[in-house]
Amino acid sequence: MMNVFITGGAGFIGSHLTEHLLKNGSRVDCLDDFNDYYDPAIKWKNIENFRNNPSFRLIEGDIRDLNLLKEIFLKYEYDTIIHFAARAGVRPSLKRPMLYQDVNIRGTMNLLEMTKENKIQKFIFASSSSIYGNTKKVPFCEDDFVDHPISPYAATKRMGEIICYTYHHLYNISITCLRFFTVYGARQRPDMAIHKFTDLIYRGEQVPMFGDGSSKRDYTYISDIIQGVTKAIAECKGYHIYNLGESNVISLKDLIKLIEKHLGERAVIKRLPVQAGDMPITYANIDKARKELGYNPTVGMNEGIARFVDWYKNYSHR
Image 1 (tube, rainbow, N blue to C red):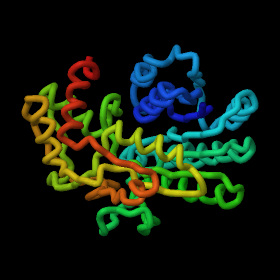
Image 2: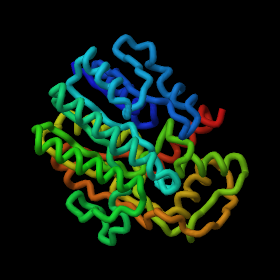
Image 3: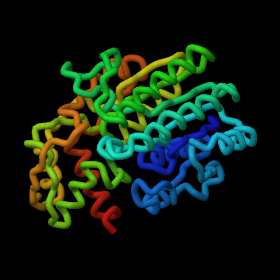
Image 4: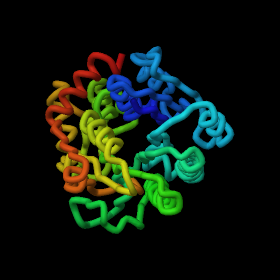
């Protein structure tokens, strides 16, 4: 049985992973600050199915609170830290860069300090496909040059990877960094494109389309991400970076058409200029994750959007 400490465990990806770990016999402690980036009630709803599980402990708090972290790690023992907590979103990071630096860099260093001081065996860091910036070479590979991020959010995620390597090098901590490629599915954050577009189309409101709709994304269904994370936990040894995506892309305009198809509604498009910080494409090469982790995504976009729309109609907008 694993004793896991997960930050951001009430969020979209974190709650799915927590649920999976609990079902597979792990003990999970979740630290989440329930901040106001989006309605905190959504996070409380995310954890309602397992909140009373005797193997689950919820701790409300901030990863920047080093004294709180010291109290937690003095009181409880863990063999694995899974660090998902972060200020998320490319566009909001342009408006509040110092907050993103404070949470995403200082908070990560606090957790690495706890890992070092308490001799935690494994550390999993949630990185992002945004670190690839305007890289021209596609699909993106883990050994590509990624030191030109184009948003404060992306810069903090790249810095997180670098800091993780430093702690691995100095203290021999086993650390795996996972570059997530636009994760979607039930419980997806309401500000993310698939959820936001689905909601707007369903309500008959205008859908903002930045640019001409030709930008492309590699969207990854939540169950595939959870598969990849659990395999990364099992194989965490040394220092590694892995892309977790579907290794397939869809344009923005085709994504909107796919959502229209499964909703049975037409979108009212509002065309807007390209936003600063937006990447023209994300596209994961997942050969390394396939070979070293046994990662194998199975949910394509048509099936994934159908599942998401079904969840939305039956739960989300209510």
